[in-house]
Image (cartoon, one colour):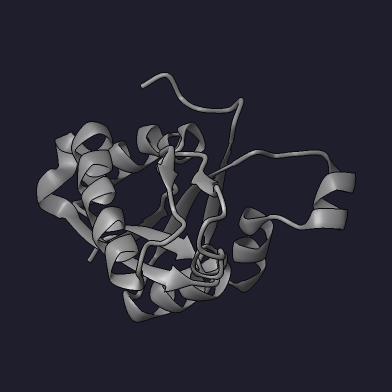
Length: 160
């Protein structure tokens, strides 16, 4: 049994999400960890009224008018493509999961269900005032997670 049997990596398919890869891959290889890569579609995307020109900024896909099943199917396809591009070196160690709901709540609950030993995620590392006023997903996960959390700041990615 290694110290990091299970590593959890949330993704929104953005540059920020890719920041975790240089930290995840070597740890997963060294400890032969299972890596759970998850995507949680924010619940708010289901509440967009039909005809509203809403666009998911990371992928550029119009979301208005899509059913829950269509959003999940799109998320699964995007997750497969993301994993192939970012985690190809450890593809045999990957497990994927996607759902729709409150991001922090779903992520923390999944971390408990999969017995995560570590969560690795990118963060904007915005200024303290902005975090205090608006909050942040990384900060909330850090406060609620059942395991250690490694937050990789936008400017702090490893070079491979």
